[in-house]
Image (cartoon, rainbow, N blue to C red; front, side, top):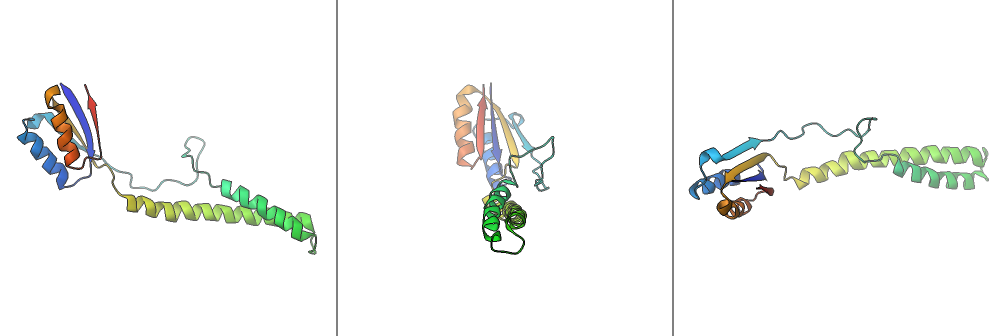
Length: 153
C-alpha cells in the first residue's frame, strides 16, 4: 500500500479530483481530506530571545546611520556645534530613517506581495492506494491543480 499526500486550495478542483479518484477505483474510505487552519495574525516584526524570523530591522538603520554620521561630521566642521555633535545627530537621524524604511517595507510592501501571491495550502488530501495505482493518482492530482504531492511507500 502507498500513501499519497497532496495539498490543495479549497476549491472545486479538490472536489473534482476526489470524484475522479473514486471513478478510477479508489474507495471512499481510502481518501482522507484534512482542512488546515492558516495563520490569521500577522507576524511580529520585533523578535524575542526565543523566537527569531531572520528579518533584521536594524541593518538598514546601521548603514544609513554610518553614512549620515560621516556626512554630519564633515558638514559639522562648518556649523556652530562642531563635527562631534553633528556626527551624533547624523547617526541618530540615519538610524531612525533606516528603521522607518524597514518597518514600512515589511509592513506595507511585503504584506501586499504576500496577499497578491495567494496560493495558500488549505486542504491536505491523503490517498491510500496500491502501488500500481500511484502514478494514476498523482496524475489526477496534478491535473486538478494540486499545490504539491508526496508519495510514502
